[in-house]
Image (cartoon, rainbow, N blue to C red; front, side, top):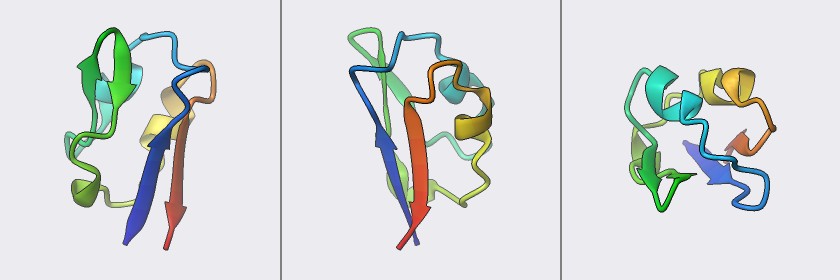
Length: 61
């Protein structure tokens, strides 16, 4: 199981996590990424790799 977080203060709304997540974990809400479907996370960390501000964090629980 994976914990998925987005630091709203760091998120600039680039949407790269939304566009690149293979399982559709993220949605844009008020120009910020939100892990709306965190239960779908497979822990690939693609979101962390593509986020230009380091706002995405995926940790194993």
